[in-house]
Image (cartoon, rainbow, N blue to C red; front, side):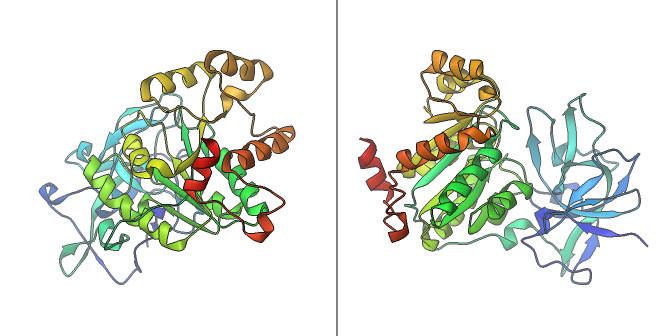
Length: 357
């Protein structure tokens, strides 16, 4: 008997093995966010693993069944493709370990072959497809006025999540209520789970808005993300950490996200792959970060080059010696006085902006 593994994209749903049927549906009925089941095929590689609904990595083998969702991906360092690229034979790929289902049309030769699957059918109830949007957050109105620390990068794997963990640690250490989020990118749970483990009291991502990835039309993205921001607003944290997966220039709606956050951004940290990439993002996107982290800061020479090229400060966040300088930067930027934090004297987004004027 085959083993059924639920990818972490299914964590917002109420699936159990007996509360749905698996039915093959005509391609004309397929859509982004549909929950589907596929059988593992092919020769196992290091990518034959699925991130389950708790964020644990589970090894899979031919014959196992994986539940995921149809979506698209446009990763600069891994692969590009989507569900519309799946051929008539139903062969597809798990484009992320979370169960983002599609077919790679371009894939890095530096990686082993991806997890390959064969379509078994859509998850259905009462003869109707079950989709992620049915379990998404809802909101009757849109409000958001939470002081926001924005993390963005020059590419994927540029060190955003590592920096985010340090932000969570420092603000939690100060006794503040911080919510961690990842609001653009391709579905994976482990990034925001690491925020929960390092100080964030709550975590949310675009999956909570019903999206398998944010490679969707802009209106669909905004409609999905606003209920999440509204929910964060209602929770009244001192600060929200917002990670933008990939870079703002990639087709994941990074520009739309920054527009949605607006004047609530009180600190912007750019994780960069190299010093010249910092210049590229600044010129192409027009958003000046307050600090640079990531591989672009690995050595003192790199830090000096960032400063020479851009005039921006840079900190190697993984260097233990950088903990105090980063804490000082963060507290200064957020207008926090460490001695008064125990009294919950936390500024609003407007107050932070005033201290920077």
